[in-house]
Image (cartoon, rainbow, N blue to C red):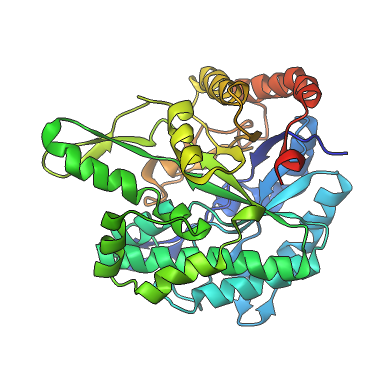
Length: 399
C-alpha cells in the first residue's frame, strides 16, 4: 500500500521550441539528460531513494503524431516498468511544448487535441490515476506569449491571454476526458507560486496588478472568480465573456490537488520603470503558499523545488521546514517533491541558449552518481515517512 503522504521526485521533461539564428529548434530535456537511454536506471534510482511517487511524462510531441494517431513506443515499456517497481506515476501530459503539427499555444484547437490525447492515454494505461495535465500553465503562457522566449515567441498581453485561455481550457478538458475512462483519477496541478514586491510606493499599483495576474491560471482552471481588474484585462486582450463563463461551468476542482512550485527565483521586485527583477527569497514558501491556499482551499502538494550545489542541502531543509510548519498549523499538506531526479541542462538560460550547460540541481548528477542533496533527501524520507504515517493525513483524507 502506498503511503498517504507523497514523497516525490520528477524526471525533467521540458520540450519547448525556441528560435536559434532565426530557425525554430526543439529543446528536449529527456534527450539532454540521457533519460531515453537510461530510463530503466533512472527508475531504479527512484526506487533506491525510497520514493513511491514520480512525476514523469513521455514527450508529447513524439507521442501524439497527428489527430487521433499516437506512437506509444516511448511510453509502453516505461509505464510497465513503473508498475513493476510499484512506483506510482504522476503523469505529466504536456510540459512546455506541443507537437509540430499543432503549432503552438495560440492554436484554438489545442484544447481539443490535448483532451483527445489525455483520454487515449488514460484508456491505454488504466493503472495510472494521478495526472498533471499541463505543467506550470502560468509560466508556459508567460514564456511563450509575454516574454517571447518559447514556442510562438510572442510578446504582448493579447498573446499571453490567448495562450493562457487555451492552456487552461485544455487543462480542464483533459481532466474531463480522463475522468470519462478513469473515474478514480486525481489531478495535481504543478503551478509556479509567485509574488511581486513593490520597490517603493510608486510601484504599488503595478505590483498589485501582477499579484492578481499570477493567479489567473488557477483562477480559470478552478473556476474561481477573478477580480474586476483581471476581468477587464482578460476582455481587453481577447477573451470573451462566454469563454470566461465556460470555466465556471466546467470546473472539476473537487478532483484536484493544488501543486505549488517554489524556487528562490519565484519572488520579484517591481521597479518604478515598470520592470521586474529577482528579489530572492523574501517571504518564502510558507507565506506564499498560504496565500494560494486561502484563495482555493484545496489540498496542497509542494510539487517542485531545487537549488544548485553547494546550497542544495540547506535549501532542502528550509523547504521541508516550511512545509511541515504548514502541516502543523492544520493545513492539508499531501506531498513534497525535489525536482528533479537528475541534473538539468541549460535552465540557467531558461532553455533559450542550447549551450549544453549542466545545472547541478538533481538528486543525482548525469553520471547517475548521487549528490549530497540526494543523500539528504533519502535520509529525510526514511526519518519522516513513519512519523507522517502515524499522523495519518494525505491524499485519501482530503479527496
